Length: 347
Ligand code: NAD
Ligand code: IPM
Ligand code: MN
Image 1 (cartoon, helix red, strand yellow):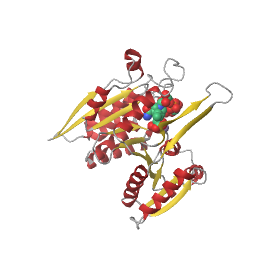
Image 2 (image 1 turned 60 degrees about the vertical axis):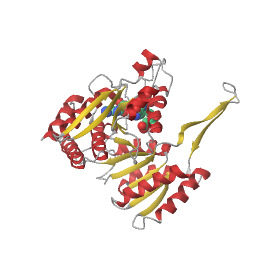
Image 3 (image 1 turned 180 degrees about the vertical axis):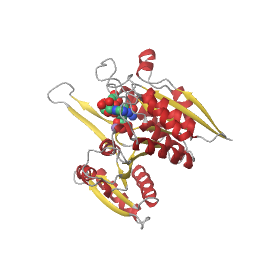
Image 4 (image 1 turned 30 degrees about the vertical axis):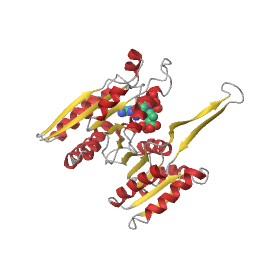
């Protein structure tokens, strides 16, 4: 019998609504001899308001012991001025990505049959963005001088290490090797000369180990053009943390919407638990109304299953999503979609 020791961090806004449905599908997908143990961690805005803590060391240690984490979303509503901007995002989500060395932030985009896209014609969309997850401008390096004066200077330093760039680039080459054998580096080395050149040099060096993989380079601004005019040209994209954040919201929008975009924060060495979550945020504008699409959470469960070695079960979840999307009727609630997906998976 296999056992999965899963941590749940539903979080804020629509996070708990979509995680509940992801969990339903996970239970339906697992073979009968697999035992699923879940521990819920009630972290987020309310927890911070009640305790003054975002994530303490004991909780971080407890999370470390899990096989994986299913995460919803965090973040306060824009009108909630009691919560400093970024407090939860940095103190919880990014802290977990850094603490558990989630250096591969995996974000697949696929246009499922029957799903409307804002693009013209019938575009082919089936690519994966490998976004670096632990470096770039996300590390919190920088500062401000002469704050509040007309002479204020703010810097936000992007950290790029040879070690960090090489391991994510190599991961992306491996993924391309097992897919359609094309890898595109997205950066901006015409302006970001230091980091850009490190990424470019590393990319070229690692490419020599993967002679079957065709390589390509795009500046990030041009990448947004091709993501909307010719998404079929992409198989695997590798890019830094911030560019990856931006282009994956764009990728989600062209592939049917943010409600179906999944992601995995992966620690490939399995030294620490990997964490699976929708690309979207806490969506305060629709929270508590049963309007959130739980499909992104369900597809994140498929990534979780694959990461834990349940490949056939992952495929079943993805097939259930494909079948549901092909027949989607508008107006279903979050739990109606979740029930329908779980029922298809259980069949
Ligand atoms: P968002 O993704 O929460 O919402 C953007 C738009 O997409 C909104 O109109 C929302 O209603 C819609 N949307 C999002 N998910 C949906 C779903 N499952 N079904 C249907 N519609 C959906 O982004 P935002 O508005 O920029 O951010 C809101 C809060 O979430 C902020 O506090 C932000 O910092 C935080 N955030 C958290 C995460 C995360 O936890 N991973 C990611 C992004 C943003
Ligand atoms: C995402 C989010 C996060 C990011 C924020 C909330 C810190 O936008 O997961 O895409 O920028 O990585
Ligand atoms: Mn984002």
